[in-house]
Amino acid sequence: MYIIIAILGVIVASISCYSLLTGENVTLPYVQILLGVMLLLLGWSQLKEKRKGLAIFLFIVAAFSIFINVTILLR
Figure 1 (cartoon, rainbow, N blue to C red):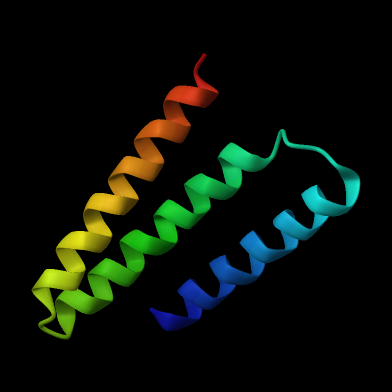
Figure 2: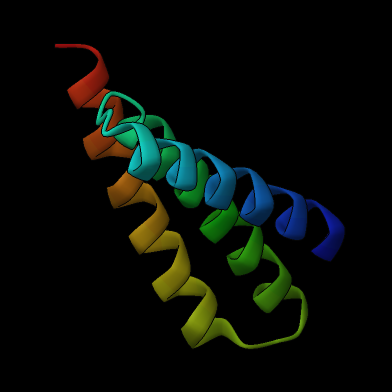
């Protein structure tokens, strides 16, 4: 699980660096969706470790991030 989270982190960091260097802001919703997926996975791992409060918070933030950015992409 943590390997997938680390891979997503590397992907998000590389896309963010590309966006910063080129000045393109088109990739921002995609980065935010990937961050939302990463937060979902972190919430799942926290739920497995019996940290329900943090897991619920991570699920809410991930759902909000994914929902907002999908609506931005579908405009």
